[in-house]
Length: 176
Ligand SMILES: CC(C)(COP(=O)(O)OP(=O)(O)OC[C@H]1O[C@@H](n2cnc3c(N)ncnc32)[C@H](O)[C@@H]1OP(=O)(O)O)[C@@H](O)C(=O)NCCC(=O)NCCS
Image (tube, rainbow, N blue to C red; front, side):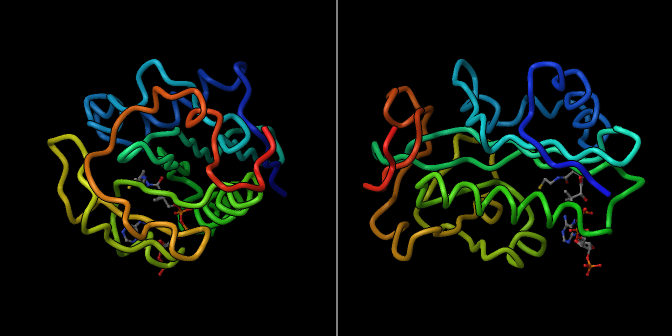
């Protein structure tokens, strides 16, 4: 039995330790971390997964970014403890958070990662979107939560400095 719930400030040390365990040293030097600096994550989409003993086994986080002034969700990092990898927990975190993002009114999500893993959730390579260097363009992936949401979105990914973009979605159904 697993307990999935939004990350709280009390979870942060454990989540950071899990990320340190799952990623190579120097992860915070990646360009995606520059896009997150000084920007609040999207709280309701940052999820923790604990086992029946309360041990943190997985986590996922999201930040707002923008491309050409349009709001985009940046997925990541996502990590599952090495002892529980391959049991579908990564898939659970991905699907649950993407469902919640859709429910919040977000229309497009991007990430930097391995297409062979993320294509099972519907991600494809984004041809017209550039991450700040150094990023392998083949790893810049996106998914539409609303059909056509990536049409015409092109350019460099930038920090979400617009409070409207930070608060989230661009879809009209978003109320807040
Ligand atoms: C990537 C990660 C979150 C997946 O979590 P998980 O719980 O193991 O994933 P699931 O159990 O849902 O899926 C496992 C499947 O994904 C595959 N997979 C995992 N990572 C993969 C990758 N980088 N590329 C291709 N396939 C991958 C596994 O081989 C397995 O395939 P199978 O279903 O054919 O057996 C986890 O492996 C992890 O934390 N890795 C280290 C951190 C990391 O790389 N995060 C992603 C950044 S790009």
